Amino acid sequence: MAVKTETTSNDAQNDYRSNSLARLTLRRIFRQRSALIGGTILLLLVLVTIFAPILAPYDPEEVLIGKEDISRRSAPCIHLFGCPEDQPQHILGTDGNVRDVFSRVIFGTRVSLFIGFSTVGFAIIIGTFLGSIGGYMGGWVDNLIMRFMDVLLAFPSLLLAIAIVSVLGRGLQNALLAIAIVTIPVYARVVRGSVLSVKEQPYVDASRALGGSHFHILFKRILPNAIPPLIVQGTLGIATAILDAAALSFLGLGAQPPTPEWGTMLGSERNQVFTAPHLVFFPGLAIMITVLAFNLLGDGLRDAIDPRLKQ
Image (cartoon, rainbow, N blue to C red; front, side, top):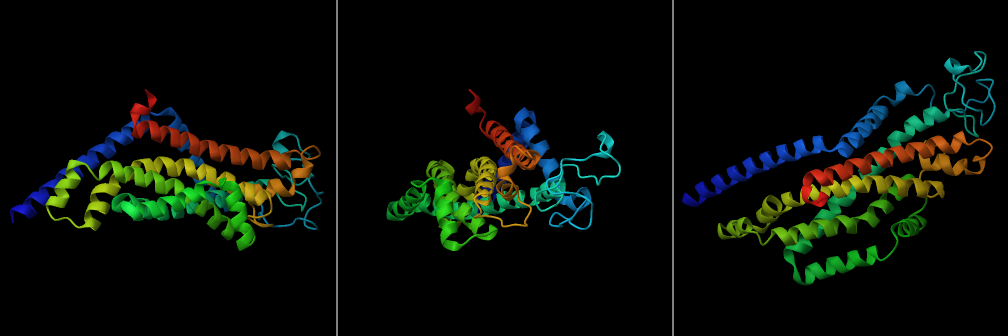
């Protein structure tokens, strides 16, 4: 009975401390200008993905040949800014297949955010499992897992992703899997480092003394301390995943036409950089803004979670 009472008391104290730490971290985040700017941009991007059918005037895959009197790769036309009323309005012009570029950029936000969150989410799940098992078990298990992670890290991530996609075949799904695989070692190392630093703490020893199982100690006592660095690394990793996916699509290995993906849009119109620069500029600008938002948010979260990094 005494053991159960003491365990309940420890759980209550840990919950109280966790809630207090969460509130303190949240206050620190709101004090970080970079996190506020990045979070605001990200919120706007999320709203764009939600209301894309309303914001986009055309179907992003619709070919307008025969439906409008308009030419291929036409310049942006906005009636409010002096474009003739007899011309169809296309805010960012049309591409080589006479599709509305503005609609494709808007729907491309959905594709890019899906790529970032899905690949990083998969990599975090697998990396957390491998890193936590290796750090907690130690010995030959840790060596086996970490040496395999070292092998993956020995290759440049983009080149390894290209090799994986070349084996699996072209397509967005295979590109997502390739990007997730090459980023697993990063999260495995982050979790392993946290597990190694936390598993020798006094409260972990107390849990062992009270008869806590390995599952309880690892997932209730140790892993919660690995969440903050995972959040920071994952936020920064989303930006990298979006860039890698755009690079694969640019090379023709990722999303395939007519999917409205920014890298695909850049790849299909890369030869028109001087004759129709708007076809390259606007997808590139969308990639830059999205990556900047995640980088700013990640930097702000890092400073808020560990203020000592600013010293």
